[in-house]
Image (cartoon, rainbow, N blue to C red):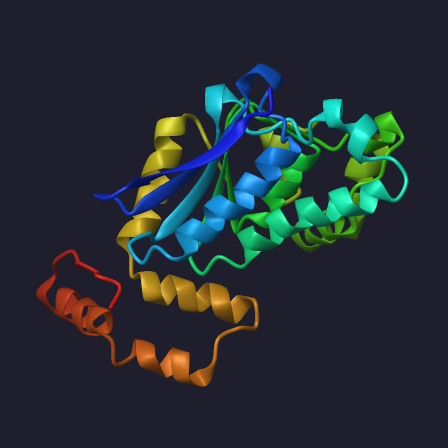
Length: 248
């Protein structure tokens, strides 16, 4: 089965969930699914009502990585570079989203699945999740872009240790090295945490993400201070009420 990637948008909460849907293979990513991942994110990038994107796996697992059943045809010799460029385009699409992207990790998060999680801005993990990069057990190589993003998140030594030992980490291990942003006891708690992000001022959050990635201009920063959300935030503070941000 080639699997699928699709999005669901909750109008009330303004959260878009991108579902990795291949549960019979622990949500392994086929070539078709890598392509669909880019298409789905590009579609969401044009939706002004979306304030947060959550990436989640169907059936209680995040993603077991690339579909090994395709490796004989697509990861041999020079074809490997073509395959890696395709997967990298999907990971870059995650990083280029203007809104925050949260990896909602349950169950297995392995190999290429971990590269998706690390490309996200935040990694929220439910207790019981497992993280691993098994390339040294298979004699393959982790793609350069994915490895660089892993080093950015956990540092050189921890990134190399994950590759060199092929150790399977639990949530506490992943939290300790900075792979996971926050740990939760249940998926319901993750949902509430993501909804809270969506309830806050979207322009402020988007500006912070852009600035952290060196993409925020002075004009864009100043525009926030003439926005309706800025006026609403000040009014709500003075009136001691919950602000109602509209993203304008």
